[in-house]
Image 1: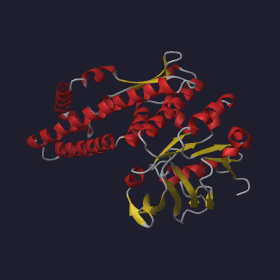
Image 2: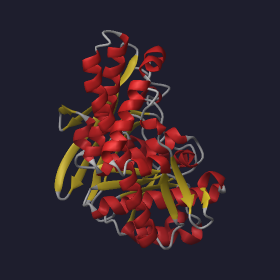
Image 3: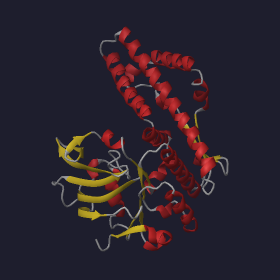
Length: 364
């Protein structure tokens, strides 16, 4: 089990100075108050322990309060993970007209990957909804992040792929060393193969969970581009094809300064199994229900793999109607971890009133 037992904020958007302590008697933390009071800002401070853009997907330059652009931002959390205490923090500062962020364990600077080794943060917010109606790029990034939370090998291949493709472009622009290009392109073809394979394996697992465990939620299926799915069934054939495409595109890649044949050739589709439609064709309500099912399937996958995570649900009532809130609360309670919610009214959370710690921002 993972839970945050204290949160300290300095100069993060509307929260110039905020500090609160919890105990482990409540898995549910509910932050409520009228719109504009800073509910999302509060849980956004936590989400920045996961990546550089947080729950809203904004940049670091948007973090500082408008009335204090000179002081650094500092956020600290004390987290208990399986009865071991971790004191994580980050600061955001401006250097050479660029905003930067450093992470710390105790007072020692660490990479973000060290936090991810012990804890994942999973969130659902109105901002996340665009995954369901925007283009392929955001869909793939959304799922790639999920896979990375559960599979370090996949993350390693993504990192290697970025490094190798950058190196290849540098060779094309400079020495054009044929021997070295062949070596690097061989590596890239391997990277592409395993990235596409891990994507499909993970989707297959989430689809199974959605069908077997989430009977009270909208059924959804994740499908990747069929031609590539068939191709990677044969390791050697797939890698040979990827290698030939990289060689074929050398001139174009050098001219454009980018890798034209890449992992972005892949496509992913979310299918609403109730209507048997691509979610791009579904109503807003159906899209939100399918997105919730994908998030819950991912939680189940992490839970079954004994990965520790904390959930952040911003304005949960925008994804779950009031009559189904109890089913939702009952489902996430099975994960036995800390869950943060925001909402405009305390009444929305009556079902878990005796199981939750409530934070009224109007009195903070």
